[in-house]
Amino acid sequence: MIAASKRHVLLKRLLVYVPLLVLTAILLFPFFWMISTSFKPATDIFSKDPTFIPRDITLEHYRVLWTETQFPVFFKNSTIIALSTTVLTLGVGTFFAYGLSRFRFKGRRNFVTLLFLSQMFPLVLLIIPIYLVFIHLELVNTHLSLVISYCTFALPFSTLMLKSYFDGLPSELEEAALIDGCGPVGSIFRIVLPLSAPGIAAVGAFAFILSWQEFTFALTLTNTNEMRTLPVGISMMVGFREVLWGQLMAASVMVTLPVTVLFVYFQKYFVSGMTMGSVKG
Amino acid sequence: MKAATLRKTVLPYLLIAPGLLFVAFLLIYPLISGVSAGFFLQNRLGGEREFVWLNNYRQLLSDDIFVLAFKNTIIYTVAVVVLQYVFGLILALFLNEEFRGRGLFRSLILVPWIVPTIAGVLSWRFILSEQFGILNVMLLEAGVLSQSIDWLGDPDVALFSVIITAAWKNTPFVAVVLLAALQGIERQMYESALIDGAGSVQRFAYITLPGIKAVSTVVLLLTTIWTFNQFDFIYLMTKGGPANATQTIPVYTYLNAFSFLRFNYAAAIATVGLLMMLIAVVFIYRRNEE
Image 1 (cartoon, rainbow over the protein chains, first blue to last red):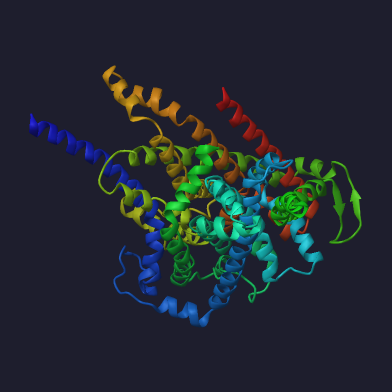
Image 2 (cartoon, rainbow over the protein chains, first blue to last red; image 1 turned 45 degrees about the vertical axis):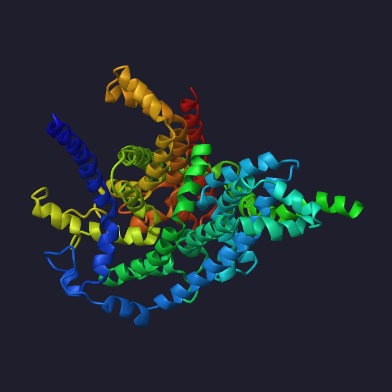
C-alpha cells in the first residue's frame, strides 16, 4: 500500500518535471547557444558537427569586438542615452505620478485612461511625424533626440507603476508632516520619496532596460556610426556574404549582460509590476 | 493663508505639467498628425502639401504588397497570440504545482522575455541559418529532414519560422501573468470539487478557466496589440522578405516611410493598421464581456 502510493507520488512528480524540463530547455536554448558560440573558435562554429559545450574556450571574439570594431562607440552611446533617459523619466514621472495619485482635478480619470491607451498607438505611425519634428528642430542624429523619444515611451508605464506605488502609501504621513510645519513640496522630498525609494529604483531600472535595447527610434533617428546605439550598431555588423557569428554572439552577450544583472536584482518588482497591470486591469 | 491655498491649487498642475507636455508633444500630436498625413500628398520634405482626400487609400487597394502584408499581419497576429497563450497557460499550470525548484524554474522561463530583441533575433538567425545552423544539423542527424532547409530564406517557411520565434519571445510574459491569476483561485474550490467527485478535466473547465477569465481577456488584448504593432522583431529577422513572405503592416509602413520616402502613403498604411487593430480589440473585449 505504502509502496503503491509512493510510486504514485513519484509518477506525479515525473509528470510535472519532464514536460517542464523540456519546455524550459526549449525556452533557454537560444540564450545558451549564444553564450556557447561566443566562446568557440571559428573552426568549431563553422564545423559540420557542432558541440553544445565549446571544445576549446577562446576570448578572441570579445577581444576583436572591443578593440577592432565600432562596438565600444555603440556601447558608450547606449550607456549615455540609457542613463540620461532613466534620470529624466524618473524626474518627470515621479512628480507626474504623485500629482495623479494625490490630487483630484478635472480630467484626472481620463488622463489615466489615456496613459493606458497610449500603449496601443502604433509606433511606426507615431515615428513619422516625430522624425519630421526632429528634422525641423535639427536634432536628428543627436543623443538628445533619442533621450526625448525614450522618455516619452517609458513615461506612461513608469507613471502608472509609480502611481500605484504612491496609492499604496497612506496620505496620513503627509498630513502629519504638514501639521509639523512641513510644506507640501517639503513633504514630497522628505517623506514620500525616501519611503518609495525601492519602487522608484525599480522603475528606473525599467526605463534603463527599455532604452538600452530600443531599436526602432535608434534606427530612424541616427545615421552615422558615431551616434549609433548597440542594437542598431550590432544589427549593421551582420555581413552580407560572410557572417561572423562568433563576434555577433559575443556582442549579443554584451548587450544582454547589463539587462540580466538589473533584472536579477529587481526581479521581484518587475514580476509584480507586470502582473499587477494585467491582474488588476 | 492665501499663499498656501494658492500653492495647494497650483501645485498639482505644476507636478503634472512636464509629464503632460511630453505626452502631448510626443504621443497626441504625432497620432493626429500621422493620421491626417494619410490624406495629403507631399512631393518632398517640407514642400507644399496637397490635400488628396482618399487617393492614398485608393492606391492601397491596387498595391499587391499591401494586400499581402494585410493578410500576413492577420495570420501572424492570430498565430503568435494563440501560441503564446497556449504555451503560456501550459507553463503556468505546471508552475502552479507544488514541487522542489519551482522558484528557480519560474525565474529561468523569463529568459526569452528579458534578453534584448537584437540578441534574441541574432541567436535565432544563427540557429536557423541554412549552412551552419544547429537546427538543420540536429534534424538531419535525427533523420527528420533529408536536406537542409533555409528557414528564413525560403518564402514557403519564412513566415512560419518568424511566428514560432516571435511566440518564443513573449510566452514568458503570458505564463507569469496567468500564474498570478491561477494562484488567486482559492484552493478550497478544488478541494470541494474533489469531494463532489469532479474529475481533473471538469475541475479545469469549471474552476480553472472561469477563474482566469478576466486576466486572460487583458492578456489577450495586450498581446494582440503588441504583436499587431510589432516592428523591430520582424524587421531584424527578415526585413519583411524573402519576396515579401513575411511582410506585415508595420514593416511595410516603415519601409515606405524611410526607404521609399513616401511618408503620406506610409501614414495611410499605418492608419489602416490602426483601424484593423481597433476592430480586433473591440472584438476580443466584446466576446469576453459575454
